[in-house]
Length: 253
Image 1 (cartoon, rainbow, N blue to C red):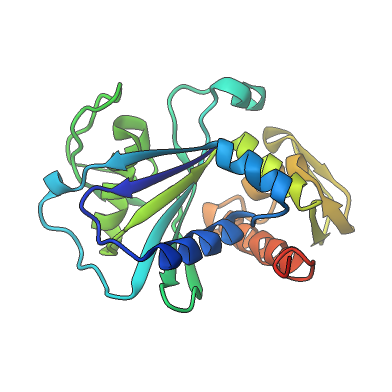
Image 2: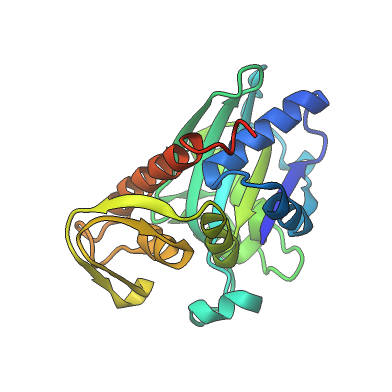
């Protein structure tokens, strides 16, 4: 499931600028591939508003730049129950995509989910209990206050004005990778990570959706086990995924 939310009262872009920015963001996540898949994607996009008017002073909005908060959710309800049991919802992956509105060029910055920072307080909303201001891991904001709280926390910690966000769950990620026919990666050494449900041989190979999900989530059986090490692998994967899309006829169709 892919979720798109907008800030109430956010500056409005022209239709063509908005389409260009969203297309760029979707390409970053996995890309739009084929009419049939695109129709299926549209049917799985939900929209909602995050009320930012009550937050008071916010970072300054930069003219000509759209900043998207891109989240990978580890929610375990619905079809995602196949990936284990866990209460609530956390931001398993977090990054800011800063997009030039005119050119569509984007810069991506990953945020470590285990980053400990001073988080703002959030009111209870939609079944979330809310939280007082506290020093805690940045990804915990979603657990206590939903995506609006996560948005607010990222703005306060980074000082970056966010315009919109996109969120994808495990199943949505798997479906999008499978839709482009998988992603070719060179795995430097064998991987056996039961926690990520991932077992790979070393060498050049094409990862399907399930293996790709395990690869970007894998942590304790690769590198030094840190979130920073996992971020490096996620960036490698995104680069390989974009090459897969740009080398195909998708973008010229």
